[in-house]
Image (cartoon, rainbow, N blue to C red; front, side, top):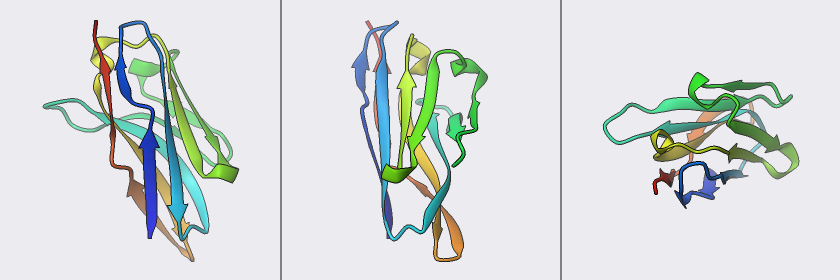
Amino acid sequence: QVQLVESGGGLVQPGGSLRLSCTASGSISSINAMGWYRQAPGKQRELVATITTGGTTNYADSVKGRFTISRDNAKSTVYLQMNSLKPEDTAVYYCNAAVVVTIHTYHYWGQGTQVTVSS
């Protein structure tokens, strides 16, 4: 059993910052790519950012230059530093990880954490 537990969401004013964390635990052999996705009300879930084991990152155009994804492989944790937040960043943010269990790779999702950007 593998679990992803997120933290760090909340209410912030436009222009503010938040840092999200997501830690994987359980029967993990290793973790390949990790990432953050978000889903706003009435919209489909969309990619925010991903990071490989080696640190290669990929960002949605809408967050480039404002968000930074990073990871601590020793702690099985991925972070999302969000700066210069805008009201359109309001969404539930989900962590995703490609987890290797014995010889198979499975994709797991966290429970989601709400981020609200509002004055």
